[in-house]
Length: 280
Ligand code: NAP
Image 1: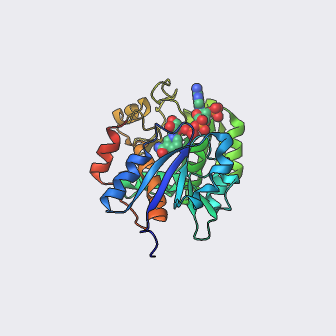
Image 2 (image 1 turned 90 degrees about the vertical axis):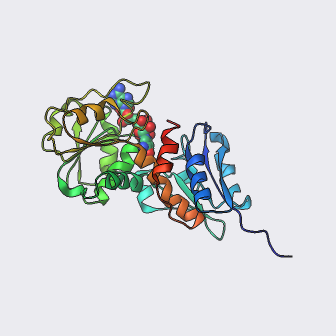
Image 3 (image 1 turned 180 degrees about the vertical axis):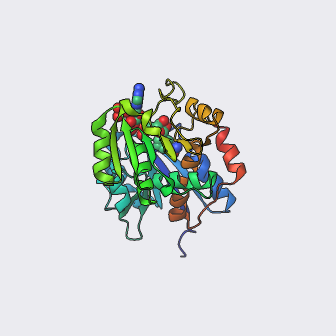
């Protein structure tokens, strides 16, 4: 008897995970490319992660995304970890290999850089000093991606300095840690400012930052996507700086994962952007 027609299966493992936009995003691409498969929610409690991951191969999964709170723990449970993901210290994508072993990747760095390129095709990481505010998970991916793209000076500032120092150690000498109190002055001669803190997110106070010293030609980016325009981006736009919101990072990080699981590098169509924006 012939085997089953190949059914492509992927999903997002998190706890809680019901709010994830990934099923809509990947589901759109599955339909768009006329593929036979599905992308599903995988609610997995932290204490079940170690038994859920080895089950992926037996269940026929091509792989999955991992999200909060599994991004760091999952890195220690897969069979191999991509070097960039190891530097970032977390994975967000797992690929089930032909032999059933698991490979871990972090596509947030790709997503971030691609979001800048989508907004500003001639963007270059070495255009001038970069200021990154925050030192959480998003900052790790953003900082590693900018270093890999050739940034020559990354000024990293975080309320808790030790977390910034940890990133500097992982990413390298291109990162200079400055005290959080110096954030306004650190903007002088910057070519790119990135907010990776949670400040400015819906339900959070705005980021406490004065843009006075920031050159008008600097690009201002916020990895937050709810709201699409944070108070920081509104203030930057009002004084004439170009801005990039966090939606492009969210959409672009999904593309290499989809390619790995379904064999097609998908595009972010205006229709897809509208569909996801309608869920924010
Ligand atoms: P995280 O690991 O919890 O880090 C939070 C960061 O915010 C830390 O640097 C923290 O500083 C800082 N922070 C929190 N409260 C602060 C305050 N009152 N003043 C100054 N700094 C403060 O979170 P994350 O995963 O990096 O996520 C951060 C943001 O990025 C979230 O809004 C998330 O939605 C967004 N994000 C977007 C994408 C995307 O695809 N666009 C991807 C990932 C994350 P301390 O170290 O001092 O606590």
